[in-house]
Length: 314
Image (cartoon, rainbow, N blue to C red; front, top):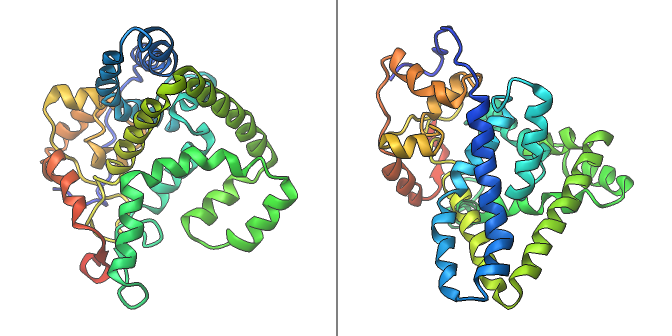
């Protein structure tokens, strides 16, 4: 494995697959419309056996996030305007304002493997392992997505209240502090309120559509919360503290890698976020890299729980 400081070679950049991305966005939007409205209104009244379709739909959650991720990095479409519009639209069905997802993810790149961002790291002198485990497992078992889902609610508060909250609770150098300062601009608050209203209306309409079958919708969203949260940090768990560019490249069979939009080539992505997803395998081969382990093994490895800081010092 080459050192993380060795940024990817500046070869000819891969072309953004705009048409393919638009096609994939249409597929995911149709899948969400089917899950939110067509299934409960047209199929469940016929037979509850149709609810089994929620299982393959759950498998689309992480590929859906991968597509949002392309828009976050302006890799969805060459047009920045179309990129932003597409990002906002797909994020509505994902369940969080695009601006929240964008800023929080870009902060992840900026603060990668800093102590304030490493979710599994704790210092025994200031926090017990039990307390660290409680927060860590809550985060990876669904807490990350639930925070994103709840994020618009806070910004419906009066702006004077938001500013007081910022000064009182979000002035630190940690991730919440950095994120809050980026979201407190008037234009940002206005955008998140608009997107928040759309998200609340969308999810409320879906809950109404499910009616007495609302536990099925709750189960589908719980599956999304778990899958998004559990697989978010799989590329960073137990990696060295302080190495901003470091992330693991994890092996997956080619069909699964392509289905995930090659998100498993995460080390390549962190060293050069300007490579669209279709160009990641080629960049991996050009650098003669080897995988840092298997995807499933790395995912299950997260169940090892929080890790003392001293074990991960560079």
